[in-house]
Amino acid sequence: MRISETMRYEGVLRDIAQAQERMLKAQQQVSSGKRVTKPSDDPLAASDILRVKSEKSEDDQYLRNLTFARSKLQLSDVVLDSVEQMVERARILGQSSFSNPDQAAGYVTELEGLRDQIISAANTTYAGRFIFGGTITTQDPYVKNLDSSVTYIGNSAGMPMQISRTVTVETQVPGTEIFSGSVNIFDVMSGLVTAIQAGDQDGIDTQVANLGQFAEVVALARSKVGGYLNHTTHVENNLAAANLSHETELSNKEAADLAKAISELTMSENGLQAALAVGARISQLSILDYLR
Image: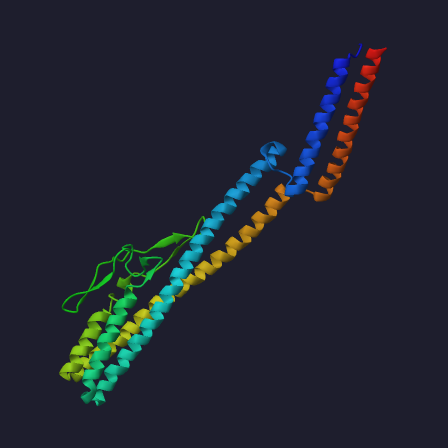
């Protein structure tokens, strides 16, 4: 079969296009460091890369959840630690009033101040949300009334947060398990003030004992918070291991062999130059044939 000039040109153009495509692909791999940048590069690998990136993105969100939960729990522990110190001070004041009845007025003033501080602690917020009101987080859970009594307007529900595909963690302890649970600290503090003012020795003894019971309640709550924090640490370690696994799999599926890509780039550049040279040669020969 006779090969026409048109067929020659078409063949050269195909060779040039293929060489350009190889060169561009190699250039892209060298510049990006990636072997797969679009599904057509390797459909199977591209599908795996999409899956791994989706899992990694999901784990990143869980890690953000975990960081939020941990910070909130750490704040709870700090607050409860301060409450323990205030309650211990109240207990000391109650015991001291036995032998210092002439200082009763000063003790009462300090106890009332401590009570207000505990109310403030019970109304602590994190990220603009109250942490001891159960699921009612947008208003003070503890409200001091005109008669100085304290009302709880939260609930006893938990606030779990998803920190992995299969794990949730509680992010707070409701006030009904601490401040207004088996021992209502506000009633105890008010009762201690009343007993000191009245010089009621038995009443003081009772409320000092109640302060000791409340201290145990707070210790139990802190133990719960500590358990939740330990749980977040365990899950964080698992997420870190999963992230490392994702990075390794992505590298295996996506990363280019730079040495091979550079070699391919060099060969494709040479191939393109050769194709262009052949094209130029054919063009020159065709003009000379025409002149003859």
